[in-house]
Length: 534
Image 1: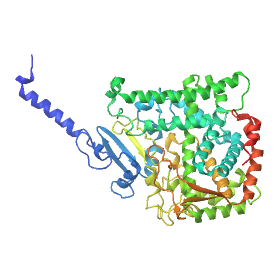
Image 2 (image 1 turned 60 degrees about the horizontal axis):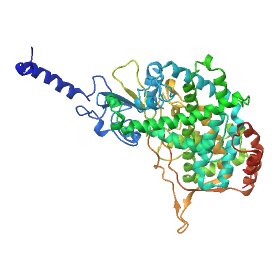
Image 3 (image 1 turned 90 degrees about the vertical axis):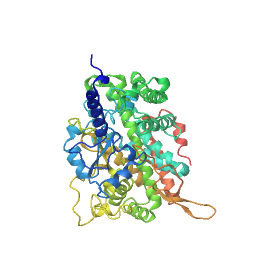
Image 4 (image 1 turned 45 degrees about the vertical axis):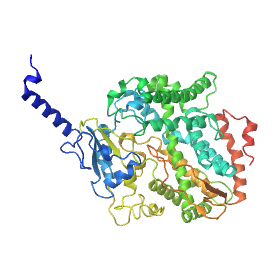
């Protein structure tokens, strides 16, 4: 029998192979894009940012021209490509959408939502995911949106009424608006108050789900899959993931049961989920767990809309000249006898420019969810670095200056006289390839109508020190880290521009309640009417 002790040459050869593997592990393969220097085994793990990845990626990428518009990072033996320009997104993700539309396998995500049923993180090759995506795109189409435009306007009027009644809770009134509108269109039930059960439960469940997907929350199971087999008693993170799954299933299961019960009683109100349940077999969605997660897709998407609206409030408070210009446009187009409506939006170019600048200035998703190249064994993940794209000094004058006029001069907000990146497009914020967000119409319209009504009715001002009279400006860098960059709660002063405007909002809300009646699961008519009294 052969034995290493008796064959030193074989031992030397084996040791050399191991050392070569260790040395090469973590190193870039030939042909990979450039990037920061690697070290053996771990690659770039030692310099990989733990928080606010987009800031470091922007430093490495196009803003400093250190490594260019496309650069790579090595995390152990995995290769991650970072796309830092619209052109690189177009060439890699848009043009190669079939091979670049997958997601890297996420063990944690699959433990919470199994079988690839999460539309955001599910794998494109999964037939269930394709059915979910197709159905969601149909339900969130502009044609279907028209069915709920009246309800959206009514919810926006209630948001204004809530701001007048309880301005200190502005941050959470926005959450109520976005969650209520989402549950209305999907499940046919709205949330009339900040503490309504659906809003309260969503704000408890969803942040835990996002946190679970964030880098560093749990051990790196995707890099070291063997960690899956560690017994739960020695891996408390497994219990935490199970708890999140239980919360997730309990919330969305309850909403689905409410629709099923309503249909059994013959009390349908036209919600999307009713259509899906009725036609589930033809849609290929006759699995109850699939139905549950289809609804979760839209409700979870409302979180990015609320983050965008909260960001808009901060931009209004910190840019008084822009706010005045916006109000002048609203006064000219709308006047002072009624609240703005959807028909006004096409006549409000500065409003649209203001919102575009808010989204450029502090994008809600500074890093897109990673893509995977299904036909390339060298690349394990593609990251879509939006923050750097919208702050690239090659294309934007003073990118850290808030200037809505840039979008009046150019539809993409870029410098005059500069040849723009040929890959730039108006929906860049919403993703690329076959993963473009299907809820663009709903998100944009919510931002526009809420901003129009809020800016028409109120002055949005920074908080003030009551002793010194000094303004307390919101910190425009104090955002949550992770998949969604959300402004953290802060104090603002929200002051009606005129008592007359509040009277108009009250009357408008009284008229708007007719749109709520089919979806009211919590208030009787007396309770609805009492909401009109400030």
